[in-house]
Image (cartoon, rainbow, N blue to C red):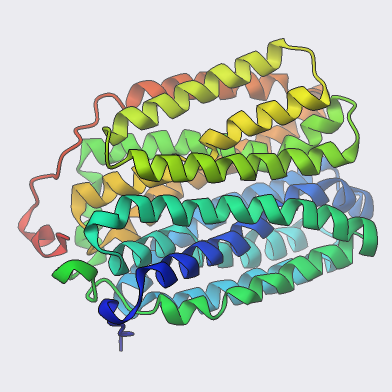
Length: 411
């Protein structure tokens, strides 16, 4: 049985508030977990590399859950998937302070919390917003939903820091987990599946197997996924290790929290600007520009003397590009294949993103433990940014000629 919702009866502003608010809570909590890395290391004595492994597994599992969550949302409706995801994020976050082994942290952080965040993540949320928003507003809608995740990071990182000072890191983490439950009402607003699409298009999905098979035979889709792999490496490394980078520069703890907050604040601007831009310029060109800008920013950061102002300026610039890749990436997936299987196919691209995220989070801890510096990771970061800027150029930005199996998936 599928959920049903009449797009005509749901104001698109409420849809955006529900999707962006859910992303704000789930992403805000996830992206603030890097602030607890040092406390977890002190409490468990597991070593930074082992704790980073748990966080890295979470990056990977967050990606692995999204194609499956997307497929369930396409068939059964987004509401049920979102309720389950939000509950798992809360449970995993609340349980984390009780875990004192690498396996326990992998279970709480990597399986429960990250898996739940994947179920209540961008694949399901972007698809739900695209389904319920009229076609002419979908570009801006993806930018607004994406900005919600950034706003959550901007709000949650300082809150996590304040709660840690007032309650201790363990109770602070548990309060953060309970805050995620505020997203539960959004599941009702976003209920329904891709059969119930705005704009008078049924968008009836084909089988998951047929949709994925067609996507994996599409060179432009594969290049897009390759670029998103690089994005995942960048984002996960910064989200997990930026407080450690700040500490390695000899700056006070609060600069780490504020660097994450500034990252999120400027990503709101970047996401909204990108949501506006995708309707006016070629999406593949915007993606190439974003990746090139990241590489230049990291190179400059490596070369200049470090200070609190430099760290915050760097965080702000990286924030402009942090998740601004999501609207054009989601837009290209919808342009290639329509919205009938968008949650599934965008979820598959998110899996590529999170494979990169696994490497970014894990290598950050491994390299720092081995060398006492993050410099090697920054160099890899620059090289990957250059590669991502180049591989988007051959993408053919046009609706693809669909096989008969995908004909019904057109928006």
